[in-house]
Length: 223
Image (cartoon, rainbow, N blue to C red; front, side, top):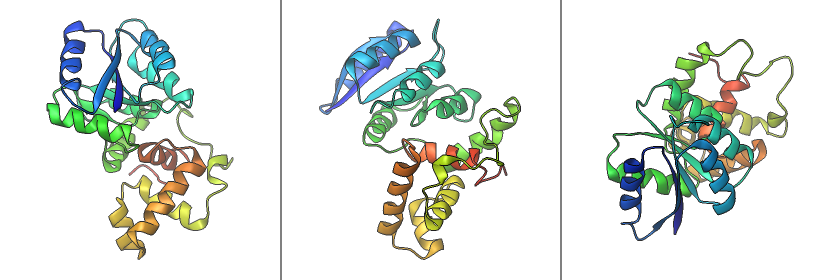
């Protein structure tokens, strides 16, 4: 059973999400939050598998709530709801630690599939789209924010083997496991093993966060 917390300041929107989710045999809604502060508190108390997080809420917004939830290291994963697939809110949500995002006009089956994917440890957004977001919005960051100081090697990369560093680099470029296997002449099962080790060693919650890490540590440069 996948447990979900709905965070949205619109009661009617929360009601619609609850009706949809509770129509599924494998999902249950643990609660509803109307702002970011409530979402953080209820996540701490209820430990849902997934928080369905709206961005624009009064008081503490969904971006900061996502950042604080991700920082706890809890198993809860956040799925951001945004208006457009290539906008600054989607970008900020991923950088804050979300495991993916969906546009608000997504079809019901897309929302359900996204929640199931995030709950199982997968990322909802394709790494190639994450890369496009990084390229599109990183230039808007203040100098020094969100990117690594190349003169000081990032400790998260220090335990990676040469092969793992190579694979992290191409993950950052948006390659799928199949593409990595084909281009690097590896079995896909071997690639999956490498990816799992990379995530564990770098403390990346999922593939999306690995893309951001590769970008921030300059393994991948903006295109």
